[in-house]
Image (cartoon, rainbow, N blue to C red; front, side, top):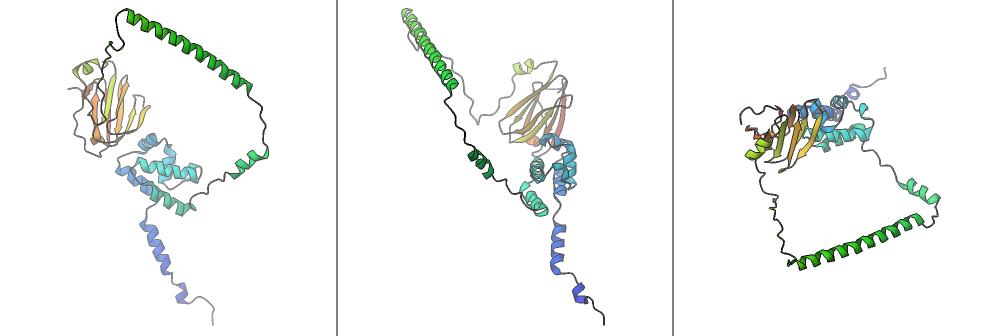
Length: 282
């Protein structure tokens, strides 16, 4: 007679199968971020430039290695930032990170800080320096006001002596641009005024919002952000401007004073480079 497990005891539980299937069905955080980046047509360099997250950390997170982040708080922040950059909802990824790494970290209690302030109350005397400064400022203000009143009276008297009346002078009227008005296209004078020794690129979010990144000829980032509908940005460099348009279909481009007639599709990501000679034909 031998003592051991029966065949029934050696069979795996059904719950283990269900948990294994659910784990396999859900992709890892890094894999989800990587697939979303590829679907958006962005490289690791593009995402790093757009989010200010170093490339080695982006590579590590896409490999599900969160140790270079420096802790759970920073890891959550990087996950949220990268998810937004690749147009992915960060909340499911943050919930998944909490399930896999012990939940949300507890906030630091603020009570000890207030206790420390109650331990040693400090008695303060009157601040004579501040009172003197306030008095000096009051005197200077009174003198200035008196002088202004005298100047205003003399000016009014001079106007009456010359036969003019207040309100006769015509003030120029300016036309105020309403929020819904379309952005005007460059005129011929604006085209002629574009510097010939530089490349000038104007980006206008005409049909919606779009993420924009612009670099100069040295690869230095000039602008990295989102243009709302109706916003414009102008970039200038001595020889070359590199652009990445997150939603090229929403953008109107003007290079060296001339509109670029391209049929960009809505939602498409475009990488463009313009020089002083562009466009060759208007």
